[in-house]
Amino acid sequence: GRANDLGIPGVPMTRTRFLGTGIALPERVVTNDDLSQLMDTSDEWIKTRTGIRERRWVVPGETGTGLALKATRSALDIAGLGADDLDAIVYATSTPDHSAPGNGVYLQHLLGAGPIPALDIRTQCSGFVYALSVADGWIRSGLFRRVLVVGAEIQSTALDVSTAGRDTAVIFADGAGAVVLGPTDDDAGILAFDLHGDGAYAEKLWVDAPGSMHHPRMSHGQIDAGRHFLRMDGKEVFRHAVVRMPESVRAVLGKTGHTPADLKLLIAHQANLRIAEVIQRSLELRDDQVYNNIMWYGNTTAATIPIALDECVRAGRLARGDLIALTAFGSGFLWRSAALRW
Image (cartoon, rainbow, N blue to C red; front, side, top):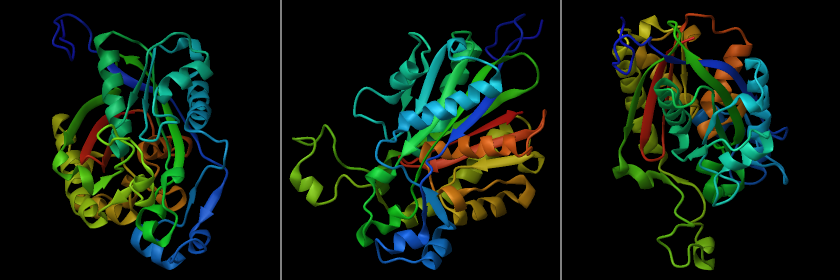
């Protein structure tokens, strides 16, 4: 008999398939003109450098878990499943509601999903695809059948909304996306992953405090120095991102015997429209082979790919059998890609 992906003879090959997708976005829209009232910037300055026109930021009382709950309920509805059908949760976020525990258990409780495992993944912009790789391993091994994967962030409450912080404040935003995954033995599903990291560049995109290396973990001096704000070396991030993501897309497609020309759609992490444009040219993709929404949502870190994926599903951009690639690059530096057949 045919060997499965785990190399066990006579056992049918199992892959992980997307059963449902969902998103949730704060209602508050923050335009570039709004930001120009807070810092020395302008609509033209932001659009030229990032491609962003507006983004969503939370208002007091909104939480990352709350957004994740809305996105999850939407994904479950599309999948035709209930919370009690889930076997596990993998929650990707770099901005949990609390330092501990992670958001996964809060989401599990709000869903009423029962005492199922809930794991947080904190790999920032790469979080969603790393979370997919964990869920895929669980499903293909038979440990769990239906796994919820969430990418959700609230970045706005961690931004320096002054001229000193404008390089990051104009880019990052809030939102959540969720997917429900399950096993399949047909030709659809996740085909391959390509995962990488290089800690030599960890402090090119980071938040220094609070952290356990500091005594105390957060001090008035650190706050006064702005050590709790997200800091980014934009030139270094851009320089690496436009090389690493195309490399990774080619690598993951190579594992499946395909090339970028075979893609129906590339969904890249929405970090900067200029980065996305360079990636498209590098991979020689047509406009109809890529999807960008950073213009309206900004960079929602681990949420960017599931938000874009859900929009493509609802817009009819994906059909059964389509070859898709997901790719992201960000803090760490960490980068990764996934290839799947819808």
